[in-house]
Image (cartoon, rainbow, N blue to C red):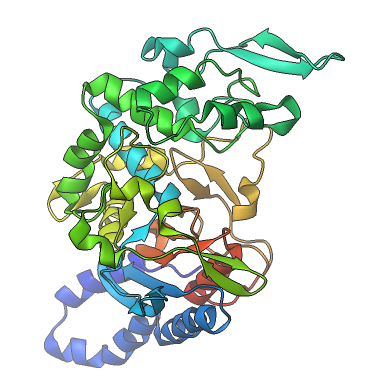
Length: 425
């Protein structure tokens, strides 16, 4: 992986000390260095080609990509349609449904309270949310089909809900998938308090800390924010993250005047794209509901989300606003999973672990089939196949917006390969 920062910094210092003649003599060397960036002309050509291929191959209806390197925009392109039926082109002002890319924003809001000393990561969750104080774990299903319970070996901690190791599970062999469906925890008419109360009545599928299982933990984070601050989660998130970053178009509720910019979502099946009815996917955003999920629900524009990514690559600050301390961002972007026995499908993201609401790349790809990326990168994606990542090594941030079901891993693979170039061992 290319390394830029140390070399670029040395060149800046060296140039400041040079005479005009020395600068002229070193012009050729500087020009050579200028090409040694991640997003060079070859990368731009690859990116243009791969985005257009998504449209030509009917993988998506529209796609946009924005990349910053060392604090500067180095690439943007938008192709295809945000709304194919209305012939609305994909653009910078397109509003995308970001689903689980909501999670890192929620985690950031929570960690502002960590910095204030409101909690420690190893604190017992029940100290703040007492409903989780008497949880049971399913150990097996007996011969009569009854669940056999066992007590917790240790309490659920706040760290567990930041890294999906609390034991909340929809495992089908214990029938928990059906239990969750019946509980309808994230129904838009539920408040976060309602959701948490219902969740606490459902037994865990695993002992806390024993398994990474992606799920509802981040929605519990949102309720924890409410309980600590005494404010609605959406209000607190807006006050401490969105407004300071100028993310005015990142929100749950989209007013009427902006809805023509909301991208349609399509379902890809048998090589064709069929529009998902708007009422099935935009319902949460077109009315104000009690539910403000921590794990999904936000909409955003590509420039708005890039502000969030730039804050992270700048170690917590962006254009004069400080959201988190550098050491907190580092903590969030550090793998917290070495002791977890099984991480389910997380390895499908590449050589990664998980920090606080981010996947964290721990090693370079081991084959051409793996997702490309730099060690130390942290990232997440969304159910409609949106993606962002922060690459501290190269001071690079990338946001990719598409709106397609089911989740299209090939889109991310091809986009990453276009950014970093072909795999080489």
